[in-house]
Amino acid sequence: MIVVIGGGPASFSFAIKHRKLHPNDEIIILEAGYKPLRKVLVAGGGKCNILNDQYEEPVLNNLDYQKNLFTLENIELLRDFYTRDLGLVLLNINGYYYPSSLKGETVAYALEKTARTLGIKVITEQHVIKIKKEAQGFSVITKYQTVYQADKIVLAVGSNLYYHEDFFNYPLFHDLELPSKPFVPFLSSLSVKEKLFSVKGIRARATVSLVINDQVVATKSGEIQFNDTNISGIVVMNLASILSWHETTIGELRIDFFDGLKVPSDYDLRALLPLDLAAYLEENQQDPRNMVLHIIGLNPKNAQVASGGILLEVLNKNYTVKKDPNIIVLGECLDVDGLCGGYNLMHAFLSGLIAGRDL
Ligand SMILES: Cc1cc2nc3c(=O)[nH]c(=O)nc-3n(C[C@H](O)[C@H](O)[C@H](O)COP(=O)(O)OP(=O)(O)OC[C@H]3O[C@@H](n4cnc5c(N)ncnc54)[C@H](O)[C@@H]3O)c2cc1C
Image (cartoon, rainbow, N blue to C red; front, side, top):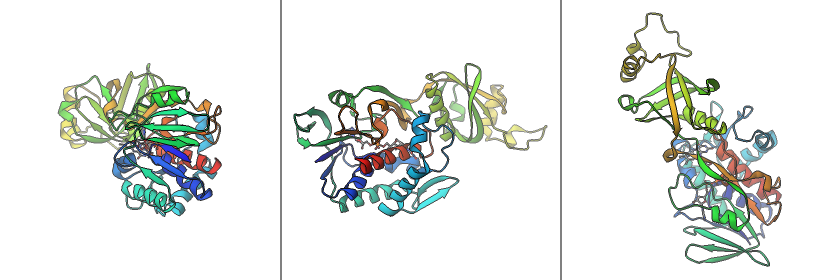
């Protein structure tokens, strides 16, 4: 019996791949929540960005791991899983791939249906709080003291962010003697020193540079959104991740609203930008080509991904634990985190597929 703890994309891809190749292996997925795959439903603003064909630049926190994972062969494995195993049709929007429905619910439906067809059991409201290593196999114990016996354990519990529930899984990591780094918010909006109440809710297209210790460390273009004390948008979330990779939460954002535009020298700012934003820039004597905001931290409330987790060095290439190959660790509960753009789901799904295939 293989007991998979957590019902996210990593668990489902593992279970589906493995059961297809080994139909006699019994697999149960234990999900703490009232339904599985909840992040898949909300991912990408509900549209679920599941693949990206641009992965030359650093998009995961660990470049060596990224190079080994995002190979042509593995991307083909992932496409094949989406299209052949799940029956999805992918929509390519500027290199970002979504299900043709532009709805995460389609992906969740296809995963659940495929798992059911293969006889994989998914049991919800099974919050695992303890794992005991026995002479043979493991006992998996839930909050309500149901005990499952397992020959192999798959730990795919994600991070403890987002659900705002009591899913602190460090005790499970401890039970299995798996060293980990604490989870911290990542891919979040950035809190800034400046008060942005008058521009709250305004969205604008801009090129934004992240400056750490007076050095520009990254520049990204796209839509940004002002909130009362923080700034968000995919561009900002990705810069927040890069800030974390530099192991700091302090820096500056320099925002150029004119990049790529032919702006006349005698421009009227109110004819170019949303009126409240133009007024804010004028009142605060900020340059629209170089608006400076001082970052004071990441915003855990709306973080989409956590950095930290179980250290990769304890794993073999097929995601089994070196010290005990009957334990498999997958997805976001590993110390792997990626930028916005589908990379986190790619990692979750691919880790499951590789482990399911190679176990
Ligand atoms: C709002 C939002 C938008 C996102 N958008 C995107 C996007 O567009 N593209 C992208 O690539 N990534 C996106 N992500 C990130 C992506 O969804 C995650 O990285 C991915 O879901 C991780 O998959 P996982 O299977 O490792 O973990 P999860 O999806 O977190 O699944 C883990 C499951 O384990 C369960 N669980 C936890 N602890 C226990 C326990 N003790 N016992 C039993 N069950 C347990 C949880 O309830 C959860 O269902 C987004 C995330 C959020 C929150």
